[in-house]
Length: 158
Image (cartoon, rainbow, N blue to C red; front, top):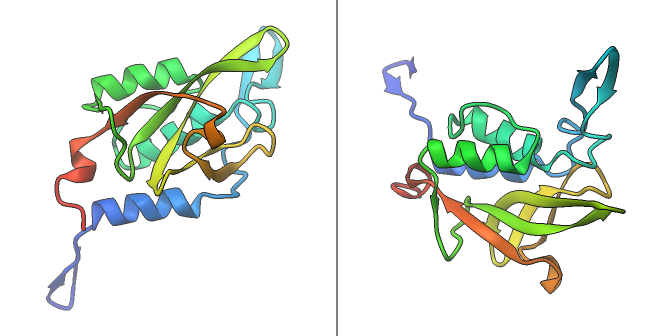
């Protein structure tokens, strides 16, 4: 983009991180309607199950995945095909996948979110139904199973 003889260039990483942080508290990712047979239903249950939709929607905005996802497993597959690599130690902007834990009686779910540094993460809270900041391992209550990093995030960020 040009304005009065100046070229404006996206500062990718800084914008990416700002969008993640600015998403805290939004209700944008709470609801996703789908048909089950002849019935229309909110498959995200008012934000209770929307972590993958939240993360994939933001990643899609920056062309870091191919499509939005409703499940952690579907999103992880997309991450792998879009150049995300598993790593041992998180850097700011990386994706965290937490182990499966009991969500409701008989149901187990993985969880996914963004690492923002200083042992903090942002992910969708199933209790509140919107993105919140929390400890990267939920105060020692939940183990990080995988960490994914993308070269586009870390090659030139300032």
